[in-house]
Length: 200
Image (cartoon, rainbow, N blue to C red):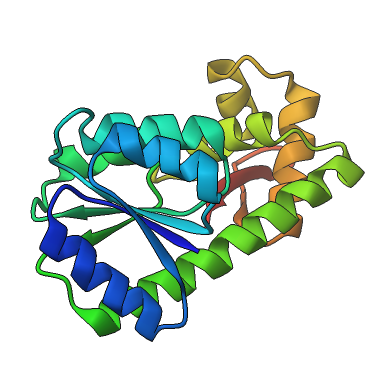
């Protein structure tokens, strides 16, 4: 099930047709507040959210949806390609963007990719329990690495985060193990090489 939240009736109709063509039944809501209520009713596998809407705008709607479900993919529909808007939506918890005017092949491809990513994320987070990995701590370390383009040592990371050296070390080893982080050894004039870590 896919939930479409958009105040434009013709856009909702087009999206519903595309979803049903791709084999996904769709539910509709004409504003953010109504969309969140509908979300609780139908428990969709993916949500489309328009940016400019009455009642709640897209950013508030995404924030509310994300508070209800950590995994559901939320694709924002917008004509605005600015980085500032993208940052606001990603900060609220959006997964992806689809630019208007809507193109069916692009949309179907995005739906498939986001559904697959959500499933992998859920499976991976469930695996964290077995390894004693806390998803919030892991996310904090990953976000910090993403903010820096250069490789960082454990000390450099630990100084900026409220996490113990040993914890940072264990989580970085986990990220290396699952292939999300790369280790680079840097050799100085003296002593052992320093290991530095960077997101792949």
